[in-house]
Image (tube, rainbow, N blue to C red):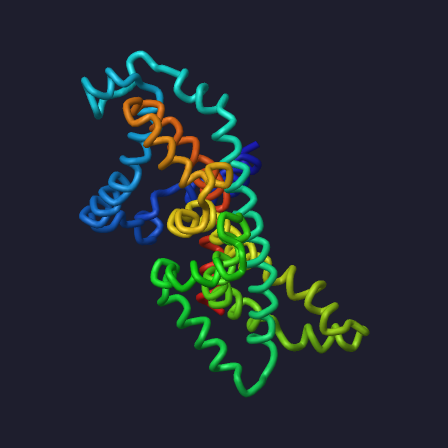
Length: 300
């Protein structure tokens, strides 16, 4: 019995040692960092989230509550504002228009961006550097700067008051960001994989669809998310292009609704909350994909 007890004690000794405090094992304890850094970070988070929370909570209040206590919590909670907006055919019509523009823009940006990035990343030709620099320069010119000549072009194409008149320019202005993100992904694919695929009888187009797209999926998802959110939240271009209320997207719908119900602040806040909710949900679900895609692009 004594030998068995000694063996058991010896066997359990390492387990007891592993449960010691990191400092007792000679390891350096984890440091929390500078408290001032955390304060600044929390301050930025509060500044960012405060307007969103105010809008969302304001939709659950009455106008009298907002007038009496602008920054107060709903008491009691009022759900009729959101229900009235959800029952409105105007909201769902503008929601459908925004979805059409966002989906078409995202599809165009992803398809064209992947093809252009593949050529710039995998092929050598004389104008390669100039073309890549042209896309990089496109990052410095936001859509607002070119809105007047852009409107003239869209008018000449007969796309004024047409959802495609909004989607097509958004695709063009979304391509620079897409190319800058995707080129490092596609360039990082080893040439040995392409050579092996060629030996197996795969064409360049087959290699593109079967190997390039799956391997660059994190970057593709990242640019798709950025394109969707940018198209959903775009206000300036629809303001210039769309004239009839039946073609309004949600950002324009918020402005029209605010003008129509200027005295009903609570309902305006409810409409605004529901308008930005899809983009917030979409971004919250895929935010890790965005960070992962951008990290991969930087490493590439």
